[in-house]
Length: 636
Image (cartoon, rainbow, N blue to C red; front, side, top):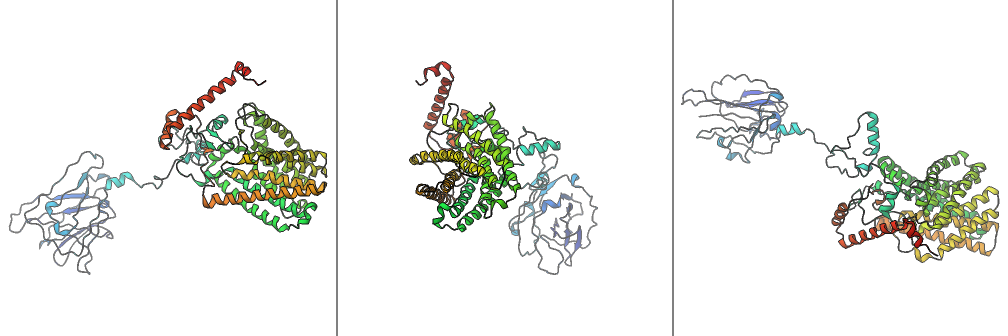
């Protein structure tokens, strides 16, 4: 009778062990910490001839059988757990020497498939499930065990657990699985350390990134910033924040982007609106024409602290965007309209200093130089592009938001004059006045090359009022009185304000955005300038005008606050996907446009209409460039 002894030992054993228990059972244990051998010995029955049968040696790495449950014996005092045991002979045969193998020399890796219940276990069903070579996986030789007519006697067991076994060679070849295999890498080109900056740092370290490798996350469309003409071709709207129907965004448009990618630079407009309100209520509380209102300074102080907290919050969030998504910030800076909003943080800081609950003469002069330095650097960049004949010349990119880059000069001049400075405020006042005249004329002309000016009125047009209002107060503070020069600037601002107010019905039907906050401080500036003028010319008309404009500005800011809260907590669309930074560097092919329309379930009729409109626009543009046709279309 063929007898086989097989034991699966505990993982806590420290080495191979071969013992005989009191009942004469042969027990062979193994260590799971390193590769050992399991020997299956054969033996003849006492009634048969003593002829040696070929023994079967199976080399099993210990990692292959990791995960098997060990079943304890009924005897709690037994030091080992057994699964299958058979009686051992009276005189145990001498153990054959076991050769040592390294991991690299193990010829086979065997996985055993155990039945779900020990009652159905027979040696006739015991066979190798898979035999694979580590170096030659294509060659496999199955081995079959010849069972005797009688099955071995099974011991009484308490329970049995069967668990799947992972192949050892697969574990060795795969290695530790990385945790970032499921990470979404579609936004990596806009990240700081996965885009252009990472490539520059890698080149400095001497390990350039292969742009043609399949594992590279660098996209050709996000490798360089699109040109100015590309922004005009791909985007539409007064703020160039809407993707045209024939364009395809670089980032997925059917899901919400990370919050930092959706946080625009125009969010600083909220700080401009609230901080300017703090200055307005401070003027209402201290100016003689409005002294009969008995306005408390507490309102101004509360608004100032709120604006200070808001400034800190918005600045921290945008600094995080600069750190983690620098490529998105770079695209905003090259945007024809968003570039002007980079002046907003520094103008808001100037407003905070003016509205502070202390005297302006107590503020150190270094604060003024510290705040005007970045404005001066931005002006060198922006104004230099206006004068050059490139794509960013003023006749090409002129739009009402350019007033943000102008008004900073007058706000700085006003603050410097209040602090007691002389030459610096005059310098910035002169620079701002020169460029404001050029911008004002360019916007009024509506040159044919300018495609950013909308046909309909938009809240952005209130920026026309900002520069002359602040300029009148700055000149009055520099000269020490509200003279004729200050009055000329104030009357220009007042006329522009009235011309926009009588057309209030044309401002309806536009989608709300955070940029609207930046259009509220011109109304507040006009109110403060009116109070300053009423201090010089005090009568019933100027007092009524001061109170009326102040009330309109306050109601407008309150309405924007309610609208912002509604979009934040009810609609939850205050920060939609900023598609203005996700345009492609080149115009997409028609096949991509068609695939985009199919994926978005759009009507093919809209596609045909949009393509026909674009072709008509191209034909009109070519006709306009023809001198002969231009003469024929000239107005009398």
